[in-house]
Length: 325
Image (cartoon, rainbow, N blue to C red; front, side, top):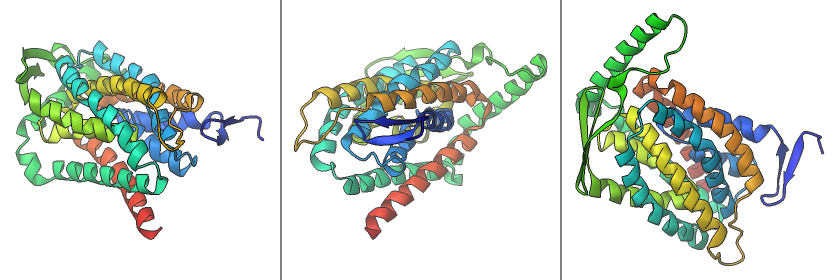
């Protein structure tokens, strides 16, 4: 065995010591541009590259989230772009969903073949939403977000010009989330001179469904919540990103708890591979911070395009694998 290789007894994986954190860094840097931890890509990597296909892989994904996400959340909090009310509603909905998703995974999808089809269908659905979001019909209905993008672009140019070649650390008081209304029916907040409102019951129900899917898949749900917040609730991705990451962090903690403590069936291993998850988390910690640091300088459509390409590629691979098997 190579001196730089390491064996992980829980997952049965043998790989280079620096390989997991490097892959996690790359994945998380791109994912966090859209408020995603990158766990939705990391799970296919575990299954297809490392050969880690048991329910423990889902639990290991949650470990990655717990270690990787705080750096990105801190960055959004520091810049005042963390929508706390939105985060609370998402967390309230996804926590019970994660519990249900755990049992869906171990009772109905313990077989890697069936689980890959589930993963492919979930990703394909997300990709379809993102495709619609970039269509001409969707763009006509989102003039406010286009104006917001223009404001960001103009402000970024101004700040860069004032600071020379250095990257701006912030965009001024206008780019801070300010809560206007917070009730059990409606939440309204202001960001960059615009007001955004959404239904609390609708967001809660969406979060519950996302929690079930996320608990089954092994993700906190950010990859599903973020696109829906943008396309359905018409919220700017600059504010959704931080809230999505914060919610994913707390739901991942519950996910690790459920997979580690709750009883499994049929002798199926569900506990996470902590060592592998921690290595992923170290790389993700750096990558998510990098993505959060530069997210405000990248147009929303470009962020969506990158995420959409990754999602469709993974979905296509798993659906085809199921079909030809």
